[in-house]
Amino acid sequence: MKRCGFIAILGETNAGKSTLLNRLVGSKVSIVSHKVQTTRRRILGITLKNDAQVIFVDTPGIFEPKKRLDRAMIKAAWSAATDADLNLVLVDLTMENDEKTRALLKELSKNKQPLFIALNKLDSVHKDKVSAIHLSLKNEFNPEQIFTISAITGEGVEEMLLALLQRLPEGPWLFPEDQITDLPMRLLAAEITREKVLDHLHQELPYDIIVETEGWEEFKNGDLKISQIIHVRRPGQKAIVLGKGGSMIKIISSEARNELSKIFECKIHLFLFARVSERWMDDPYFYKSQGLDFER
Image 1 (cartoon, one colour):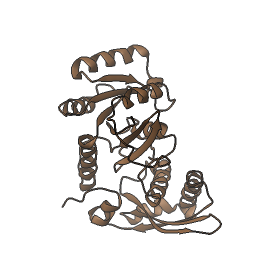
Image 2 (cartoon, one colour):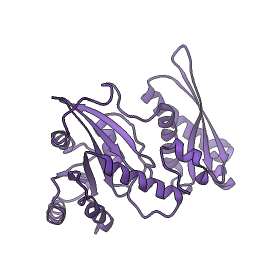
Image 3 (cartoon, rainbow, N blue to C red):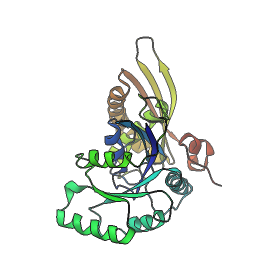
Image 4 (cartoon, helix red, strand yellow):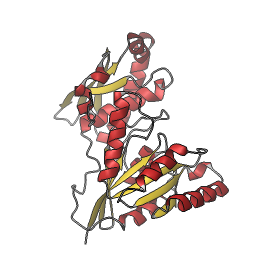
C-alpha cells in the first residue's frame, strides 16, 4: 500500500529548515540566506521514497512578531503545524540555551500530531554536546524519535527520511510523480532573486523588500523572458539596490539569471527594476501573492 502525508518542518529562524528541505527534495525549492526570517510563506517540497510520497512543509521561523508581516508569517507556521500529519522540529546545535525552541517544543507536544526532533548542524559541534542535548530534550518532551543530522553535509538525513515515512498514513499520492513543489514558477523565480538581494545586501537592507514577477514570456526556442520588480520602502534603499552606476542590480541580475537557468533548464532573459513602494507592507495584494493572510 502506498503512503502519503505532510510533515511540517518547524524551528527557530536560521535553524536550517530551508537547507534541509532542499536536500530532501534534491532540488532548490526554498531560498537560503544567512539573514534570519528569510522564509516568508509555507512552501511544499515533495519527495518520493520507496512507496511513499513525502510532502515536507517548510515554514517561516518562529520568532516574536512585531509587524503585520511578522504576524502573517507566524500564523502560516502554526497553521502548517496544525494541518500536518507529523511535526519535525529542527534544533540548532550551535545555539546555547535555546529557550525559544524549547517553548515551541512545549507547545507542539500538546498537539495530536506525532512530534519528532532533528538536532541539526552536527558538523559544527562536539559529540559530547550532542549527547547532552539529546538526553535533555528526550527527558523533557518525550518525542517519538530524535535524529542527529547535518542538513549541509547530508549526514543522517537519509536515515531520518526512512524513519519518518514509516509513520505516514496509507493512501494514494496527492501530487504527480515529477512534481517537487507547489510553488508557482513565477513566485519561485521571484524568491531566487530575493535570495540574491539578501546575499549581497543583508547588512544594508532590512526586511522592507519584496520581489514581484511582473512579466513572463516563453519563446518557441525554449528561452524564457522574466521581468521583475524589486519593491523597497525608501528612496535610499532603492539607491542601495541599484548600486553606483547600476553595478549592484547587475550583479544580482547575473547571479539570479544563472541560478534560474539551472532550475528551469533553459536560457533566461532576466530584467530587474527597483521601485519605491512605501506602503507595500500594508497592501493585501502582496500578502496574497506570498500565500499569507492579511490581517487588519
